[in-house]
Image (tube, rainbow, N blue to C red; front, side, top):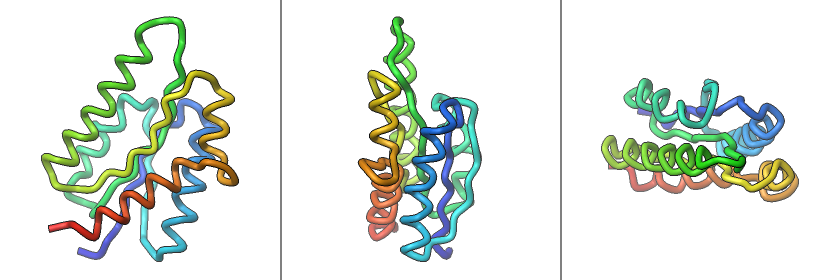
Length: 136
């Protein structure tokens, strides 16, 4: 199978998601990797979508943002999302670049998603590509 990547992005925070997608897609294009993008309503739904397409792609990139609020909801969504993505990666032996930001403020998320700063979408794409080298 030719290496084809699926980007699953939460569009809950559009500006942040668009920044993450920009960083990831620029990196994938520079490395001549084919990709598709699908959207989820939130980060919690990303593992469901990856699971639905688990046999269709060589690797995956999970992108989104969870910003701390006033309740325990932040911890639940952050922890469960990370756990399920890890579970999928290990169970199916597929690389999943983790580009889901967990931030205290919207400003932190902008900085970490900005294609000209700390873009974590690019970092997640890079991690996915590195792991593809070890695919069995």
